[in-house]
Length: 244
Image (tube, rainbow, N blue to C red; front, side):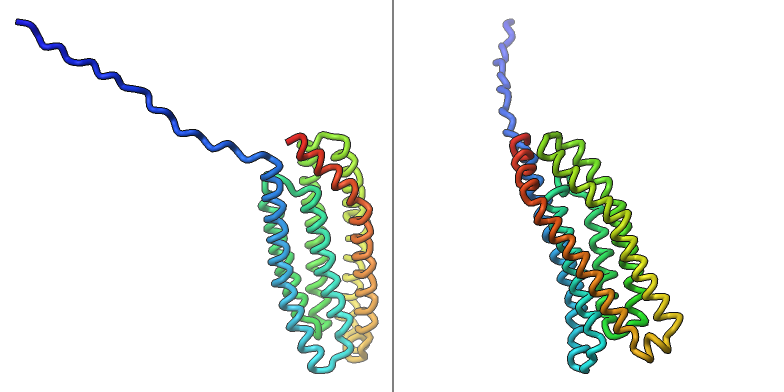
């Protein structure tokens, strides 16, 4: 008895679906930079809403002595935004530094608390002291980002840019932020220890003017530094895109 032969079924290998090609690194860098711009714009917009409300109350009530504090609030917001833009163009790259962005939210919270006290110098200076200390801590934490860029940006233009950035960053850590912190400590101590002179006697206005001048000087430094490195930024970013 002859057994029936079973037909051999050939199982053709199914073609695997093509895997999407990974994004180029320079494209991810651009996405991360856009996220940085979006985050800083949102948090600064939120902080400015508190400053706007505080300034409205000052103008409506005719409290001229509070105008230096409104100006100081604007200068703080301008300075933080300008430094964030500088970072986005230079050291903000893939992968996204979540911790760095979280610090922006904490800084915005301090700004909002400060800006809501434009007409209350007895609360303005202690809150501002905490805020300036936080900014100093931000500079210390950002050192890690420069170390990362040294590792993934090996090129003459990138090295030249990082050299200049790190010198200015150390200037902030060693000189500028401690100077601002010392100024805020002195103002806080003056207002809290001699309220009759600085609050009742309204000598806090002089402190507010000095504070605004100091913040204006810092903003001028940031603007001058940004203008001095624009050429280096362009050269470094061209180098990054060619090496990606």
